[in-house]
Image 1 (cartoon, rainbow, N blue to C red):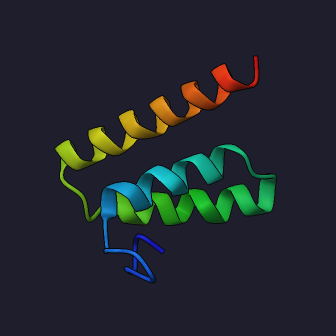
Image 2: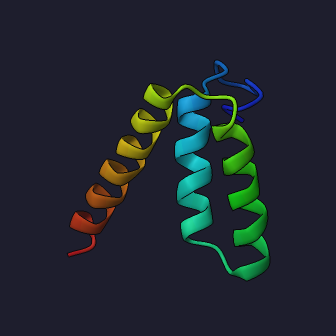
Length: 69
């Protein structure tokens, strides 16, 4: 949705964050498809945007893990 601006403002950083998280939580077939989408998006991003997306994904995952403890 963020990648195409469907219902939300278009935002490559947010799109990459959610694709990255989805790929890390998926089974093989879905994981491959989601990782390919993430990687295609990464090619359109600057190094700074990519670093921000990765940081946001890591922070989201850490917060989620902390809530589950």
